[in-house]
Length: 285
DNA sequence: AAATCTCCCTGTAGGC
DNA sequence: TGCCTACAGGGAGATT
Image (cartoon, rainbow, N blue to C red; front, side):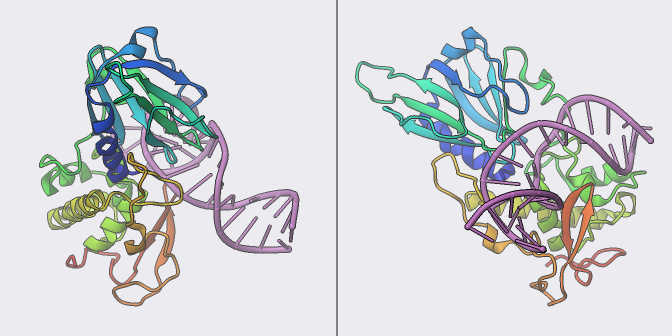
C-alpha cells in the first residue's frame, strides 16, 4: 500500500521515462476509480515538463496543466517501452507516448494498474494549489516547516489521540498507518496519548522519528506490502524491518514484552506497553 | 470546531 | 477442498 516513500519512489522512477515527452493519447479502460476519470481532449496531447510528488499525489506538470494521480492503496505505475504488451487485469489507464523522432526511440506506455481502485486521476488546468484535493493539505513531513513547534501548535485543545493527529493530512501529509505506528514506537510515545498532553520535547522527538522513518524508507525504495510495485518495476525491501506494524502479540524487539494491538479511528494500531508508557514518553532510541 | 463514522474496492488470510 | 467472512487502507464527506 503506497505511502509517501512509495509515492516518492514511483515519481522518481517514472520521471526519466516521460519528462520532455508529448502524450499522443490516454486510454482509460476503467474510469470508475475513487472518482470518475474524465480527461479532456486537450490534455491527451500534453507535453510532460516535470514529474514530482506532493503529499501522496504523483503530479505531472505539463505545458497546459497538471495530472494529479493518487495510487490509492494498491495502485502502481510501470513504464513499458514500445511495443507495449496487451493490458492485463486491473490495467486501468495507459498514458501513451509515441516516438518524438522517426524511429521508435522513447516511445512507450506509462501504465496504471490498481486492483482495488482506490486511486484516482484528475486533470487540472488551473492553479495547482487551488485544486480541491490539494488546497487544504498540511506541510510536507520532510520539510523544515514540519517541526516540533509546528506540531505542538496543532495539539492545543485537541483530545484526539496523537496518532490520529499525525495522520491528519490537514496537519502533515504523507504519514500513513504503517509509518505512524513505527514513528510512535521509536519516539516512545503511546499512540493513544491525548494530543493536548504532548510536551514540546515529545513533539520534537516524534517529528524527528517521522522524518527518520520516512527518509529511510525512501532511501530503501519504499516498503513492499503485498502488491506494490515501484515506478521502475522493482519492489522495495523495508517490511522486514518494521518494529511494530503487523506484529500484534509478538515480542517487542526492544524489551520482549508482547506488543499490544488496539484500534484508533478504525485503524490497526500496535504499540509496546513498556516502551511506550501511558504517561509522558520515554527517551527515543 | 472537533471527533467519529461510513464508504469506495478486491485480494488475501483465517476459520470451519 | 472450498466457501464464507473479516480485514487491509487513504481520505473525502456525512454525521454527531
